[in-house]
Amino acid sequence: MNTPTLTKNQTLVLDVLTRSEAPVSAYTILDKLRDQGFRAPLQVYRALDKLIEMGIAHRLESLNSFVACAHANESCCGHGHGHGHHGTVAFAICESCGQVNEFHDHAIDDRLNGWAKDRKFKPSKTTIEIRGLCEACMH
Amino acid sequence: MNTPTLTKNQTLVLDVLTRSEAPVSAYTILDKLRDQGFRAPLQVYRALDKLIEMGIAHRLESLNSFVACAHANESCCGHGHGHGHHGTVAFAICESCGQVNEFHDHAIDDRLNGWAKDRKFKPSKTTIEIRGLCEACMH
DNA sequence: TTCGTTGTGTTATTCTATAACGTGTGGCAT
DNA sequence: ATGCCACACGTTATAGAATAACACAACGAA
Ligand SMILES: [Zn+2]
Ligand SMILES: [Zn+2]
Ligand SMILES: [Zn+2]
Ligand SMILES: [Zn+2]
Image (tube, rainbow over all chains, first blue to last red; front, side, top):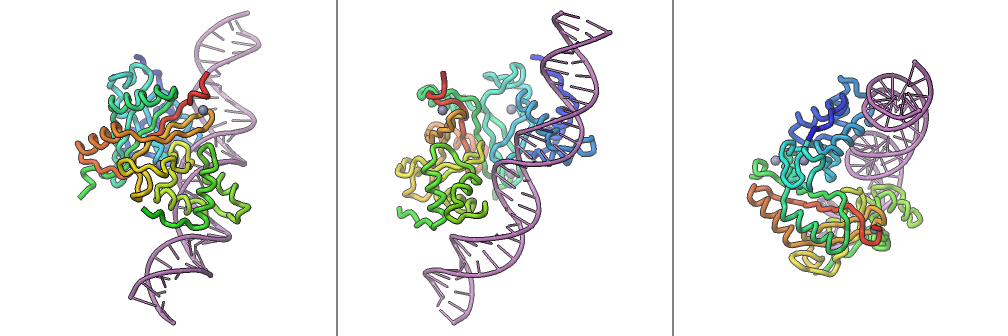
């Protein structure tokens, strides 16, 4: 229930993520935090590792970039932050405006879990990312 | 129907992929092809781009690595190589032995497409990767 | 032939991520 | 208090992944 208190660096990095409309790369985060004393990539990566571990940030594998979690307060099926970990989520990423939509879907979860169970495969982390164009960016 | 003839470099790169049990990074491919005259990363990336475009190789986003397509001869729902493009596939990747299992699942496709349609999101490429442990690597 | 397209080769550079080492602090058992 | 340990933090250097920019050769269509 109680989210562990964030350290100073973690707070700074999370602030950058939450303020950004689009995913941000680690090096962009670094640049935005130079004024707050950041000097090296590791400061960013270490904070990101923890934030991701806590489930309040996510890495987008297809972009090498990071976003704040959009489900900070939900708790459907293990989702949300009350329980320390995050269910499997999917991301729809607009390649034009960069907007990201985080969602989760039981049917997909069940289907993937079913596949894994049938083959005795034990999933640790699942990535689902849809690249495309959002409604606003189509014409 | 007719797969376009591969160039020399494309053939060499594809051979490396098909011979490998596990995903291979671009730089590993480069190293394996030095004897055949490869000198620079671009030679690998250019070949990979084409192979991926043709649908006979895939990039694993969560590994920055590449695999040969495991569905070279199927043609279910746009899958397979007769029709020039590949349906959405998922990959189960063992983090211990590296083995990759490529599959596709209509239910998941439908679900993702449904989500996209509801929100008028136009998908261009979808990534689904499950990291975990295969049966052989569990104990 | 002339031109445009495509594959190729090479060098340099950018972007992403981690290794390795050292410092400081706060909690905690002895 | 003293020693110990876990952990956040800081710094430098290095590794790994991808692209930019430029040049040249082969090929087929016009
Ligand atoms: Zn989330
Ligand atoms: Zn958009
Ligand atoms: Zn395939
Ligand atoms: Zn395995």
